[in-house]
Figure 1 (cartoon, one colour):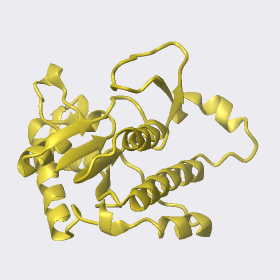
Figure 2: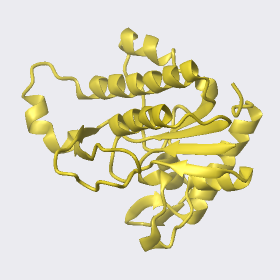
Figure 3: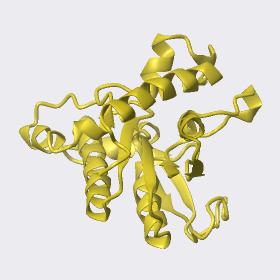
Length: 220
């Protein structure tokens, strides 16, 4: 079996802090599998969703299991024309940058009636359902979790209805995130850097593995 993973910096190493492991790498090592990892630090869910689907269209591989660690819904990715970090992902031409909702509040709040929270929740739900449906159509076994926080707090029935369509059997700890876990358990690389320590990755990976095996997620 091959493990495929995609996400933000929480699904990659952090060599400057002597952290060389990460969750999907730990999972792949436990199962003794090769890992294909497309994670990219600082990027959001637009890139995760698009590049995941692109990779599977480019690579028809049998016996594969996908791990998706969702980034923040308030990271807004866009394709660039400047070749930014081109070549980071083999066989992919598009390059990406990201703008953050919090850095553009003046413009956003100048838009009549713009609801930042509900917009973010809608984007998150839509990304999850889009990739969930892709995996189901392709018969690709998978597990998802929130690497960074993505909470559904709205009472908008439209959002609640669509949130209920997310397959929670394949979404590990839907109401929380890896980020929340390491803060609560003092498993960051430093007090000033809220990225997972070596143990922060290992402990989350252990709990994720238990969830995968308990629910037999490596099969369709």
